Length: 276
Ligand SMILES: *[C@@H]1O[C@H](CO)[C@@H](O)[C@H](O)[C@H]1NC(C)=O
Ligand SMILES: *[C@@H]1O[C@H](CO)[C@@H](O)[C@H](O)[C@H]1NC(C)=O
Ligand SMILES: *[C@@H]1O[C@H](CO)[C@@H](O)[C@H](O)[C@H]1NC(C)=O
Image (cartoon, rainbow, N blue to C red; front, side, top):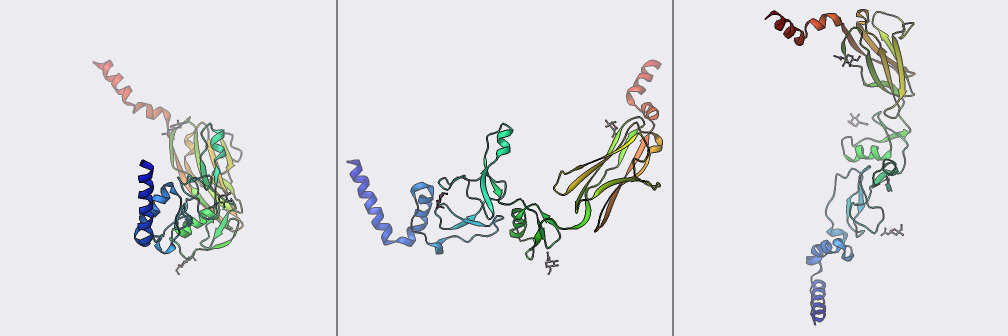
């Protein structure tokens, strides 16, 4: 009995919506997107869409455009589920293999189809075509284009300069300097007032360099062990390739460890308690 009534209601609904298709379209579309299947696509009824960082993709009904998910966002692994959404231009939905190694549950993520760097017309290197398109779509630089594949060849620049250090004699200190360069550059250190690059023949000074943390990046360190008063001064991180050079300086102040102890409040209290 109930099924007869339900069938009659369905029949009536179908009759009504066929008579008034445009009026009912939006309501139907919402119902259909919730999993009842897709109706006839009427692109002229699709909402206007703009400002999508990863471009647009078609919705679950393959009808209206919607924002694609950007690099690193969670996505639906196959086209039978419509929960997180589809990945945008030049992106594939892939399981994050690193997460499995770290003991986490791997989640499908939008991953750029190519990890090849791109050089933009603004002289900036983008890690991949997807990063480039995010900046392009964000409309911050509407006349931006790709000059060539691979990183831009430019003068190196110092992305993180060394910072001023204050410490007491006898302690160890480290200056750090991060450089971005293509072609790759060396990171060298100099103390102001001397002509030679460090460490020279000084056994209590050492330098180190490692690639990264960014692509086309190199990080250099200068370590001074067992600070002496004479180590005070200005230290310069210096880098160069065939297009030019860059440098950044920081100061080292060295205090006498004996003097600072006298300023210590704990000592003052001890003196007072001895007097009384
Ligand atoms: C869904 O995926 C299958 C297999 O990848 C493909 O053959 C099919 O055309 C896709 N359907 C849509 C609507 O994209
Ligand atoms: C874009 O156009 C502006 C003004 O015309 C110009 O100043 C800027 O350098 C251009 N940027 C690029 C990346 O070409
Ligand atoms: C001085 O150097 C030591 C390591 O040798 C460090 O633990 C300490 O925080 C530094 N002090 C200051 C004020 O930076």
